[in-house]
Length: 535
Ligand code: FAD
Ligand code: NAP
Image (tube, rainbow, N blue to C red):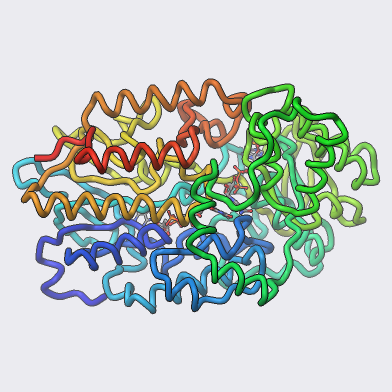
């Protein structure tokens, strides 16, 4: 967008971020007749899919459902090519949406929001950017993403490395040439497990440094069949509604109530069917997999047996075999992950046996040896859910900083608002189901709710909204109580902030499932935004 007078005026809303959340928010605000602009650090729309261009990057939510549903013509017109779309296709989709709804004219690219200060007298937010812009707005809307602040681990000597150095979450647009190169990859989460098979096909040798073995299920990706697509598109509204009624907003079938209610043969058959179907469906095989350790162990054992069947070297299979709770860390979905370890050009280093001492100018030094490489890749994830917001200097009433309010872990009402930060909304903020669900529908649900709230405020001539302290306390306590009953708190996952040194250990997403969350949101809308103080 161009400079000019618009910049000097107070706008109704400033949106931070132009991924799927920021794009749709901008559209809804404009449709409501409100003036809005967005700031985006990246050079284009797409968010996650703009930054994460590593080899093998793709979605593990089915393409026909990892897409917007707010516009019927859009969902009918767009044609996905694969069951699980690759990063370039999702980025193209984001660009298509931006073009179709003429969003870019209100987005400032290559511009990072650095500060947002609430002015109680003027009832306005003062927003500053790294480009020196200062803007004022009535509402500040965060669409900064749950997985957008890259985590650089606390490993000595990272700056000493003299070869090529990349992070999966900040992959160069021009790509990387691995031909005849030796490569070290640190990390074995979702990004690593997608990229390792692809990089190993191209490089001379790949060394993987694993701290925690993960459960990996096959994607069983395939091109989409036009007949299947037509069938889904003709039934989109009812399929979307069905997905919304499941715990994670996905379309795989919900399984029986307990893994222990059926015979061992039936249980294994259920797991086998879901393994063959591919993707995250294994998580939903039985409803008590995240609440009953004995049930969970049956699913864990199923995957452990698969690893032993696939990986030929028993010692490598042993190292790859996870010991923690199945699904406690995000389940990984990949193509040929375990099979790749049967190749001759890959080595697996278990960091529990030989920890990393430091990065040297030539590669990675463990307690056992130096691994000299041409290329070093950090696949070490994100400062999830709070990182992107805490990296902005956000100050609410009385100059209170958001990062201080969240010192002991994030507190929010419904993941949408924070007490002490009036007129600020957080799309898919901590305390909402967000990362435990198919995220585009979840984003739409939040944006629609914020849109309704702003329209209702404008009808009432109201100018200020703030989550009440008691509603926030109740919501935080409720989420903590549910989380503590779940097996999801039994490992060191990024859901708990355990991957970032010094981060408070708090389970950040709402764990009660999408239907319960949506019901609560609908209730508060019916009840005139109960829990928010509107004046
Ligand atoms: P993002 O896409 O993260 O966009 C946020 C944007 O805000 C970024 O572009 C960032 O640059 C910008 N921003 C942040 N801070 C500032 C600032 N201070 N100033 C200006 N701009 C700022 N979800 C699924 O449901 N299914 C999947 O299969 C799936 N796969 C994923 C794969 C990867 C590799 C990753 C990292 C995430 C995946 N996710 C998946 C989660 C994914 O993040 C969401 O699905 C979705 O893309 C989030 O959209 P968003 O707009 O909320 O955030
Ligand atoms: P991640 O899941 O957090 O994985 C990071 C990896 O780096 C882990 O194996 C971690 O080990 C390791 N690590 C971190 N610090 C380390 C250190 N100091 N030394 C050694 N190892 C270290 O990050 P990610 O793979 O980028 O994925 C993040 C999330 O993005 C996923 O969970 C998912 O939600 C989303 N995602 C989805 C897809 C998809 O298929 N759709 C693909 C990529 C990402 P520990 O486990 O021991 O901490």
